[in-house]
Image 1: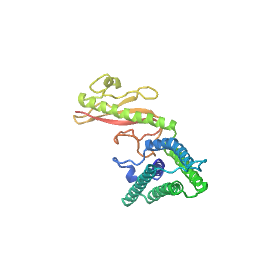
Image 2: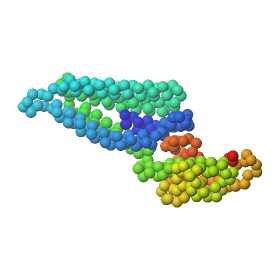
Image 3: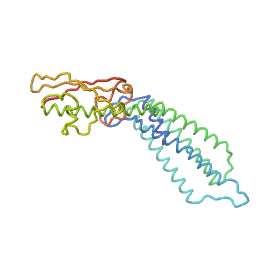
Image 4: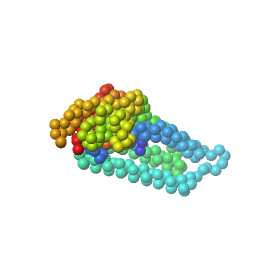
Amino acid sequence: TAIGILFFQVINKYIPDPIVRTSYIFRSFSISAIHYSIASLIVAFPLYIWMLWFWFKSFGPPAGGPEKVESRLSKWLTYVILLIAAGTIVGDLIVVIFNFLQGEFGSRFLLKALSIIVIASLVFWFYFLERKKIQYKKEISALPFLTLLVLSGILVISAIVLGFFAGGTPGQERLRKFDLKRANDLGQISSAISNFAYDNSRLPVDLSEIRNNSRYNYGAIYTDPETQKEYDYKIVKSVTAGINDSLEYELCATFSTSNLNEPESGYPYGYVNWAKHDKGYVCQKQIATLG
């Protein structure tokens, strides 16, 4: 599952579908899914190999005693797990084909289908040999199992490396999280300024005027999470020509990364003006409507 998620996310990033990427309800690319899958593989794959080694060793040639026989519970659990794995693989393949029929790019469909087929082939090839050796006591050399181990290891390492390329290193992710916090902070500040202008028919003189007012300061953070410096607030248009006129201002922050060419991911609200930003000092002009 973790390998499949990693390959799917890499495909979603490097072969983006404009229809999926611009959807507000469904965003196909998820950095969190990539990092969780990498963590799962780093922990679970070595543990799984160790458990298989212990499993095969326990059914090795008896040392002067009776040969060990697999229990019914073990057989039953093995086939239940295989059934669940088969259902998961078939379900994923159905979803991939369904998305293709719904208009997803042909290259995305082919790569995702190929990923599922490769993973399924390794899983069922291994358990076909494992059942023959453990359950039916057939003589099988170590070569097929070593071949599967090497192929699985190559697949896991490839998935992890591609995952780091697609999701970034821990340092890059930390910078991205800082930028995510900046974008959300600016969105909340903009909302507070707009509410202040609507009630008072003017813009606040500075950010302290709304920061110190409990009516408008409802959880907004006014300082950069990394530098602890206050965000820049600039009044562009403070005079109105009529009752229904509006006021203009700018909010600025210094972003650590640029995500202009990245899929939309990680921002909970699609309307945040700073969700897409360049690296460096970025300002966005805002309009406050009067009451």
